[in-house]
Length: 55
Ligand SMILES: [Zn+2]
Ligand SMILES: [Zn+2]
Image (tube, rainbow, N blue to C red; front, side, top):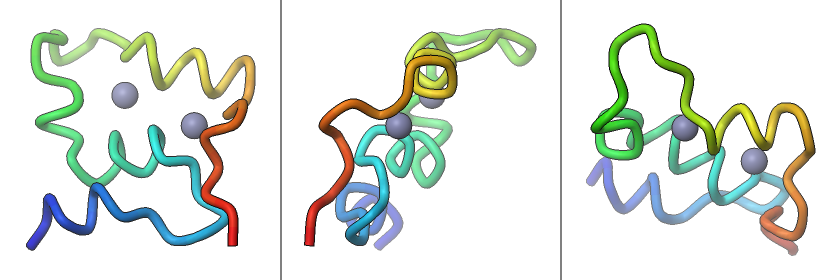
């Protein structure tokens, strides 16, 4: 199931970015088509913090 995949990132991936990539419609609902996602931008600019899945 797509949402299962979205919620279970493989190790080395960022949970938030993985979720936003694989459940994009869900993660980005409320944003306009040309609007940047603040969460995605934050990770792009500031990095992924402690949200990387550890092995
Ligand atoms: Zn991230
Ligand atoms: Zn996003």
